[in-house]
Image (cartoon, one colour):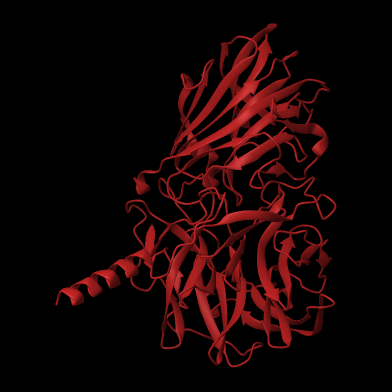
Length: 550
């Protein structure tokens, strides 16, 4: 009996040690439109970045929980840039695949050449220059490899370019040559409108084809990437159809739930299904965490949920109507070395000593002529005439806001010479939806100023100003859901409030529009004037503390 008890205890201990707990979102902050592929024991995931540069981050994991950014697909200005584009244009909905030793990413460069494919032998990079696909008219292309054939599937126009209603789209497919990177044969329509065109479904998009058993499945988002977002599924005995929709669609949505529920997760969709380390199916998808109604500043984030196969159909999150903040699975967690945490509450510091972190973002392109990094001085930015209110490449380097409640701070060394010269910390959602905490001069004396973007004036409004000393200054922006505080200090961690409880909804997607989330940015500008002045930032500190994880 004693041996049996010991054996049972050992079994229980083994099962517990082999359990993994996912915390949603698995990638916090502005990481929308996830696509994932499995290669051996490794998973690789990519996201949309729109007009930020570098474009399309590449993450690697062995357990679908612990993700490490290993590079970016678009990391050379020679591949492309987004100069002249608004923040929410640029790169839409990448998809990643692996076939016969080569990695493929397909994506859309909206408003320009359209759809393209890039390849790499190693997901770290370097990735090739884009190969454009002019015949593929639409957005959200993804590849499907079926034995010796390949296909490219995508969202396209209504039949004959004659939509029956606003948002009427189709899903179409070409055969694809993975060697020449060209489409083959004739385009074929797979879906018209959505799973039931009689109900006038809108924005069928983000399609993925995969095979399970004897069936080919077509998974796509429907309803638009907001509160009506959903995921639908269809299947066929052939990769090119005809596809029959699941009679109980959608297989994932949050649109019918009470918007006033505690810690809601909403707008779920744009999913891709993947086999986990335990052989079971999981869904990776986008969703958002509003702090009130449909107000959120963190953008669309990457979530995970379990999938069950019921009567031949994959159902996402079948045991609960609500997407959960955590799930448990019976396989071993594999932590990443030197990987920054991406889920739950976490804090970290980015020290500017040798090179820039791959998660940091520029506006539209990367120009190494206006910044440098030295261990002694940190990150030094030249003051450029360009501002964040234009469509160029200002001296701006940002990181994502990843929590509803968080703080970002930096050590600034800067002395302005003219009143147009400014440097400091910005919380930035779009060209005019931002707050800028910066050092400058006024009446020939150094000041700390706080500005708010103003689209009507094509400028920014001064909302606070105090006198400060020359030299070093510490700046902090604190997010508390729909309120932001702006703090400063002349010595570490002895913060004084400059201005508090400012409107955070001004930084929300609902107010600003577009598809991105807020970024904390290090930003220096001479505001339209030429300047030879510089500003140095020693580090960027981030602390996230959301109530849902406490």
